[in-house]
Length: 106
Image (cartoon, rainbow, N blue to C red; front, side, top):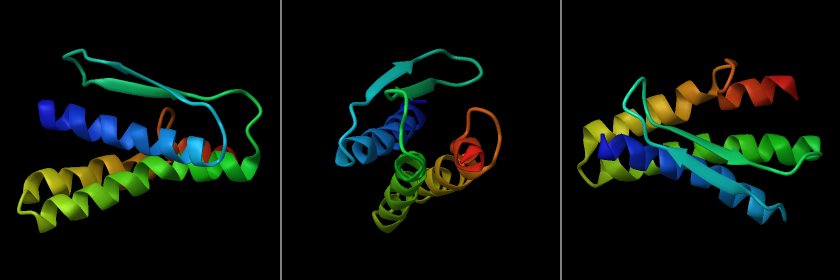
């Protein structure tokens, strides 16, 4: 559970880092609840430019993929695969609350 919470936090911090690199304020909130899984959300100001919204949406999945590759290289293969597949690639699906939904809207 702690590993998953850490992966979620790193994924969301990828969004925060992308937003701050583009000059936006971003706030991260993490809720730890047992079911169905821990949740995290990044809050941004209204009125993001289209290009910036896309870059911020990609910040989380790209961070998850890079962390996963690093974990696999360090020998933590299972946690690395979870990071790449679940937090990186699945989050790009165009489903509500997923990063892919934000990309599809744009």
